[in-house]
Every structure is written in C-alpha cells, then in structure tokens.
Length: 209
Ligand SMILES: CC(C)(COP(=O)(O)OP(=O)(O)OC[C@H]1O[C@@H](n2cnc3c(N)ncnc32)[C@H](O)[C@@H]1OP(=O)(O)O)[C@@H](O)C(=O)NCCC(=O)NCCS
Image 1: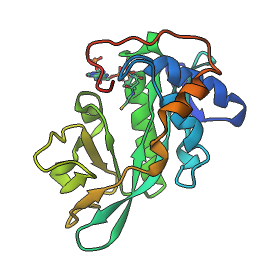
Image 2: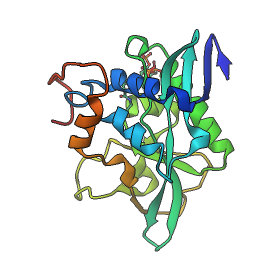
Image 3: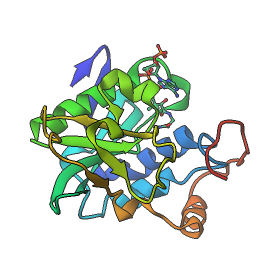
Image 4: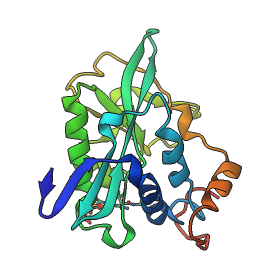
C-alpha cells in the first residue's frame, strides 16, 4: 500500500533488528523506565500464535517509521466455547513522527487486512483516545472481561473491535492475553544490552514501575 509517500509492507527477516530498535526508540520511557516491547516482538515472531500474514512495517521515503503485528488468541466464553480472536501489538511509530497521522494509517490498514483474512474481532490493551478513532470501543460493551481483573476494577484500558459485524453477539466471556507477551525482566535486561545505551527515566504518566 502507498499513500502520500508511505508504504506499508510485510516485515522482512533481514530487518528484524532494525524494527526492534525502532520499537525500542518508540516505547522507551513511555510506559515505564526503559521498555520491554523490543524484546516482546523478538520473542513473539517465533510464537505459534504469531500471524505472519499480519506482520507489517511502514516506510516513509525508504526509512522504517512504524510497525504493527497480531497474535491469535481466544475468549473463554461463559458457555464453554473458545472463541478465536486476534490481539494486536506492539504497534509503534518513530518518536519524531508521532501524532502526524501515520499511526492511524497503519492501524486502519492492518485492521482491513485482518478483516480480509476472515478474523472476527481484535481485543487488546490500549488508549481509547487513539484506538477509538479506528472503531475500537471498551471490550466490556461487547460482554468481554479481561482475565485476572478484580470485579469493579478499572477496565477502560481493555478495547475491542469486531471485524465481522456481530461476531461477538450472544457471547460473554474472558479474554486471554497470549502467554508470549509475558516476558521476564531479566531477559529484557539481557537482550537490551545488544542495543545502544539509553537512559531509563522515571517520568510522569508511566503506568509501570
Ligand atoms: C500510539 C501510536 C502508535 C499512535 O501513532 P501516531 O502516529 O502517533 O498517532 P496518530 O497521529 O495517527 O493519531 C491519530 C489520533 O489518535 C489520537 N492519539 C494518538 N496518540 C495518542 C496518545 N498518545 N494519547 C491520546 N490520543 C492519541 C489523537 O486524537 C490523534 O489525533 P491528533 O494528533 O490530531 O489529536 C504512537 O504514538 C506510538 O508509537 N506511541 C508509542 C508506542 C505506543 O504507545 N504504542 C501503542 C501501545 S498500546
């Protein structure tokens, strides 16, 4: 795809490290001092739940400026069924190009491709201010609960969109984050040593220590 000098294409093996560095630059000190997402994508690419057909990067004038990826997971429905769904991310845009509309272009394109592949719904943790503009709503409105969240706890981070309209009709249940997203801090630390040194900062707005 090519819109105004932007190309969205599949990630290639030869650029894995470059993409990991992009993810690291984009997430660094945003949600915690440092970040773990560059290691998360490193691990997830080898996970059986990883959807290779939805592993995208975005280029501007030949330079990598964004990436997005999806994983297969399930909703454990209250009626005993497991409902196949997707989860998404990490998604990122290069730090100097945030808030210029590129993230939305990448997100909308990725969702369109996921829909074309026949997936029914996408659920994940995110900020409604960004994802709401691409059709996401609070997952609770679809009757889906976040795993391990105490009753009454704030679940406004947990978002959902249907790619097949009505896919989650008549379904209530608990969404499961794929295990691959849970990485050990010590492994992140070790992996991070392979990248240029960067200062970890405690900043306002971070949600993890
Ligand atoms: C989140 C991210 C992918 C969004 O991409 P982007 O190119 O910066 O976003 P866009 O310019 O397309 O944003 C479109 C609209 O979404 C909303 N939005 C985007 N990022 C937002 C944020 N951090 N907070 C609140 N609203 C946001 C805004 O309304 C924005 O329009 P505006 O800039 O005209 O107000 C990008 O900022 C990023 O890489 N952030 C760091 C990594 C990250 O947080 N990834 C997502 C983890 S869930």
